[in-house]
Length: 397
View 1 (spheres, one colour):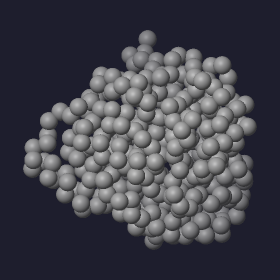
View 2 (cartoon, helix red, strand yellow; view 1 turned 90 degrees about the vertical axis):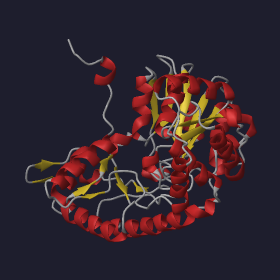
View 3 (cartoon, one colour; view 1 turned 180 degrees about the horizontal axis):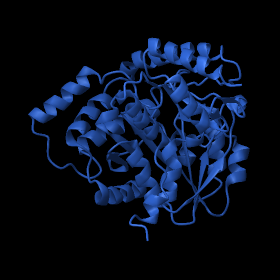
View 4 (cartoon, one colour; view 1 turned 30 degrees about the vertical axis):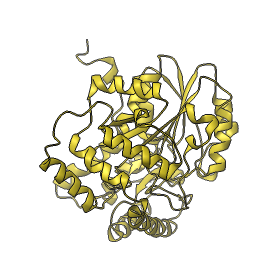
């Protein structure tokens, strides 16, 4: 008899975190590993946000917080939704959590029953599928490809919906593809979803501020579908606040209440100091994020240009986030010494061990033909990492 539960035994480890862990282990052994495996801005948190945290400590804002978040913080998030997204979420429709990952888990665990289906476009962020499985839901995936810019069509969505479908989960800008849905594309998907009265959507918008094509578009902006959308966001990516662990949702009040109930049994309220720091971020004009966004766009263009020099890679031009997700399937079936490349995981391990570059295999995101590059590091490191990848891939015959 297993001493562990079936629940944990059946739960896959996050492959992005697993690759980051392996990279650190190799670095500890003295190897010069360039890690492009984790989704973390390499910028520092802005000083005015850090100052707000110091002030919170000095003012002894160090007690337990209300489960859905400090009211003042939720009011600031409400104003942010109005200002940036034209979304009207009152403070009691907002739940602040320990990162957007917990926000998503709260919603799925609060809404999905055993046996109910949840539609997830491929490629997807690694934790969507495992969280659905944890809720005993059934993930139903919709494939895309580099040719379709990794976006689903309304026709694909409609075809995937059955009498058992409870929810759709997707991100824009997308991790791992960097794809960004336009207003027209979102409206077309919304017009499919509204035909099914019991269908809800998690719209993960954590990369909102890392958008290279103009204004970010939120799914909930369309009045006819507003009551069916749970908008997920947070401060990790846009404000370089990954370690502060603050995410939030805007949702119909009955869903927000359910998430508060769920969170109340798991973690209670998020860190008081981190909330006060995050509040200063969301109150600030979005223009404070532009410098980081522009740096990411420059890096994207740099890496795309370098990757185009490597034979056999197929790429789209990602419009947001800080990832490139090339199709590397032309290398399947090739070998070098004891390495035999059958899939994206084989290739990522080959590049780690032979090229000293840590990437994440596409199968972690549902697309085994691809591999994810994160360009959230310095230009010098990016140039060197692509040089290593090119050199390693040239050995495969």
